[in-house]
Length: 394
Image (cartoon, rainbow, N blue to C red):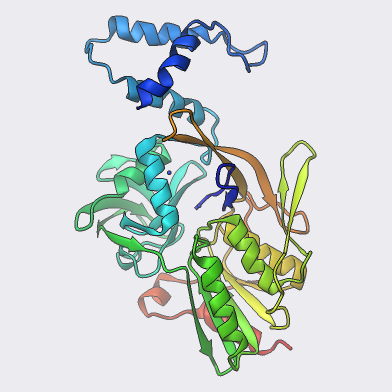
């Protein structure tokens, strides 16, 4: 899940009557030979309208879908930037995006992203069809229903994978260590994301698992925190594995329970020398609890921000595998039709000590790999190591 700044909702997400509204601007633009915001050396914008007109003049089918034509042109502009996180969302995709944030939709329950130009599983959600079918963080999706994902836009991939409950989708998966890719058939279901779970382990260790930084987590974490404060727990294992991210302000709020007020949670770097610090604003009620953090290849975005904040501020050890490395900021800019928007990368996230997250990720202090044999045997050596380490902390 991208982290996005939405100026309309005043939220940062760490994670989707056109002709009547667009018509006036469309006609005015046709009479403009230069883009008003382009640099002087930029291509003459009339080239676009020349191509548009020639398609109408020469294309064999006169019933051209104007919406698809314009949507396709906008999507092409965003893809030409070469940034997998700068996207155009048409009205249908925008609706899907909002459903994702609400935490309930039909699909297979897997977060995907482009990593080194390859469609990759970021995190399969716990207990959802993708995980039940055996998908793991880091799996490469080579084909969807037999169609190659090479150069497939991520929004198209997500839309193809998603579908009605009870229907199936076939993903061709390649995993490191496999000799060849394998087809995995997954039956779609209604996806309801439970944001947090906790239990007491070994008598005095609060094990907290956060699935994503969704809309409800702030209230849910407050409830969990009060339960922990009233429990025999003296130490904490915070599990951020397979957590694809969510709202920055939710991650910042959770950090406020573990950090002292005023400590830096993350730094927003705009690349032009301008930076903005986000600081802990909570009550710090869990500061006194020795804490370790679990991460893996599915820990991305907001979860990387929280993990980095705890390590840089409290020397909390990170245990597991290197995180995904999704550390850029996207701004959601609503377009004038009111039902579609652009998601534009505007900055990158740094840890409180100034370390870059994007494309780099967080390297664990204690590396513990989870093998397919461990998965099949229902073993969790990463959690075992975390419990061993936290028990020795004072």
